[in-house]
Amino acid sequence: MVRPGLALAFPRDHGSHSVYRNEWWYITGWLKSKTGNEFGMQITFFRNRPGIGEDNPSRFAPRQLLFAHAAISDRRIARLMHDQRAARAGFDLAAASEVDTDVRLGDWRLVREGDRFIARIAGREIGFALEFRPTQPLLLQGEDGVSSKGPRPGQASYYYSLPHLAVSGSITVKDRTLEVLGSAWMDHEWSSEALAPEAEGWDWVGLNLADGAALMAFRIRTREGGALWAGGAHRSADGRVRVLSPQEVAFEPTRHWRSPRTSAQYPVGMRLRAGDLDLTLEPGMDDQELDARASTGTIYWEGAVRAMSGGSPLGQGYLELTGYWKPLKL
Image (cartoon, rainbow, N blue to C red; front, side):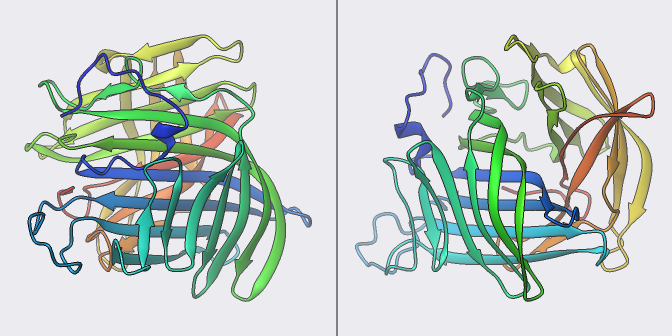
């Protein structure tokens, strides 16, 4: 169970926490090629402890499962290109280090070397060879890294972010390899009981604002569509952090998009009120639905968005919308 008062320690807490049920390393960002084309990118590695066969001495017992998603948003193609992997830990198929960030599934890998995170992904339509360099201190979410996800004790996660990562390297899109630069956001989160039983899913956004500030906000929805819980954090350009209470965060849909594949309807346009900020989130393109049934067993919308205020751009980031296809089960 997640408990307040445990100080996170680095580099140890960049690594895996195998005693907890769920964990993810989640990187999203905006990239630009030398010709000026913009791309949204997402790389996520998941670890799950299913609680099955833990007393079984067999090497085949699924004590730890690893999954990975990778996606590129390209407006010229007008659909999300993505790939995924899944494997049990062991047999040199998949592993997650508990010393520092080093998680891999086959030839997919995310590793921290020095102060940089390095991702190598080789998918069917897409690929990444990227480096992510911190330009700001890490941001502990919630109270000293403990982020409440519901009204009851234990409904929480350990959670920190690295906003404004400087990105360099290359991406591959349909056999074209492009050199890119950009800015990204990384989340690392782990827990055993983050969602309440009555939760349907969540809306989450991470934004790198143009003045150097960073904003994370989320709401957890009930099955009736209301807000069960909410929260977030705003770090201003001068480094001051404001932890946002549930009453200070509101997501209001402004526009919906219905998937032609699943008929799920997603609020791809949002008005977000977070503390003193009042923003409009507009997607880079509507079709950013990710079908992850072959790995994590769900379908969700996860896409590149721009943050606007009064018609002026304030920043860029990613919006994640889960539980709109079916109620989410972690």
